[in-house]
Image (cartoon, one colour):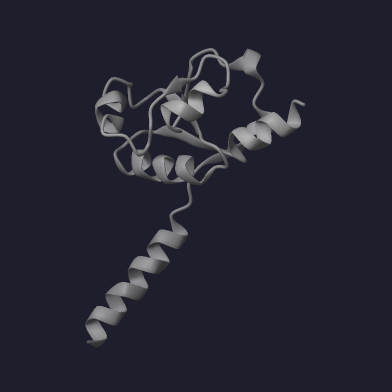
Length: 118
């Protein structure tokens, strides 16, 4: 029982310490996106309602998430965003664990981007 408790504590500590790389979505100029893969991880319906220019739509919760990412070079710089930043943070952490070297979560998500540009 103590062993299981210790394992649980270590897992929680490890997940809390494994920070992901992030940038504020409002600080990313749309004109400086050369060589960067911009990915909207929201649903196709959310994407259709509005998205950042030149973004790919790869649904984090969709069945094709991994197959779509297998087409992207792991050495590329990848910026992920969603509605508020939660799904993209999860996707960033997942891709980082798979060996994607330069993957960033865009904090604040599309909501923050829209608010800053209205």
